[in-house]
Length: 142
View 1 (cartoon, one colour):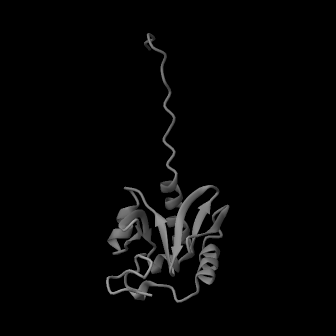
View 2 (tube, one colour):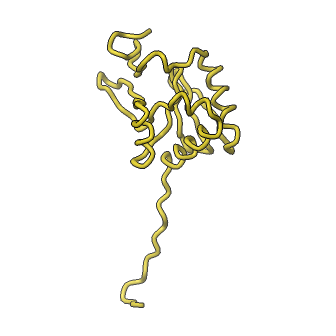
View 3 (tube, helix red, strand yellow):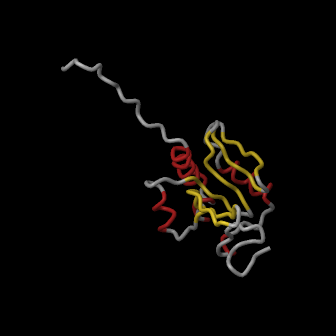
């Protein structure tokens, strides 16, 4: 149920209704998984009335209330903002919390190859692996 402030009754961001999927969440989840079938080991787990999307153990997506959100970082976030997409927002202990997951644009969701590319970037953002530094022993110069 939507409140007048753009949130539903449990506090999740709803944004413009035109972007919401009309499918029940299980059908939408199956659609998204089908769209992402080119990526290895992608699966969904039930969480807090929605679903989390994972590749292996990397949590990269949230499906909630007919919307799919992907994890972003400082490099990928701009593509979402350029398309006017909003972050995933929820309430915790009477505080509004914003996560670094942004709603996937509808035109991306409908294009299997583009969605897979965006999901791959989200997987990278979900678990950045910094290069291992090679430490030189003290007292040695080269």
